[in-house]
Image (tube, rainbow, N blue to C red; front, side, top):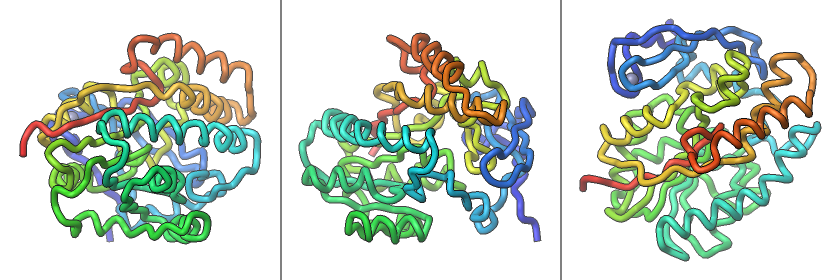
Length: 301
Ligand SMILES: [Zn+2]
């Protein structure tokens, strides 16, 4: 049985004009190498020869995969959790601003252990949360009393019911990229907003670290977006990108992880320096940031 998927065309725009650009190593779990390919038509990059959905589970089995474990071990994890609380409030405010609603209905896709879902529930929002990892779902129940569901539910939910759909560093992980976007379009109200945060391989820190850039995170990250590729994909699915927002902390966090990939050590000073350089390059232009939050709205019914 074939356990991997070899793309002959771009998974976003279907162009056959694709080529290999990098080989990156899985530094977190398997130590295996994966090729990263580039689409010359829409500029999406994607991991080649990815494990099929039923075979990718083992690549997520790591303590360091922090969004699933809530582990606070180690300096980088500790920092991640400190910053996260601040970030949750920023995300709540962003959601309320772009929807122009203090309260509404939210579909949180890839909810992890439910920290963001819980923040929005506490703010009075009606939450539907989807999460593929069973341990994370159990943790969400224990920690926050949240009943997250399996992502299969995405295809079953009733149409036009959500004011917002959020994916915080999730879209780069999903096998059914086309199907997910089609369902988001189906599930959003006409005035609804789709909020997608993903790493940006065109950022300065990505350029500095090259194949060691931690946000390539192969093979868990199936796609590596540029702002242009996100805009093209949005358009092809009946959306438009209304605005982009920077995620300032990601440049430093990703630089810290990248230093570790490159040297095997936690080199704080060069990481902070490279993160700050990347941020300086993004002031006034979120499209240059290490990670970008894309705010999408529907252009068709
Ligand atoms: Zn493409």
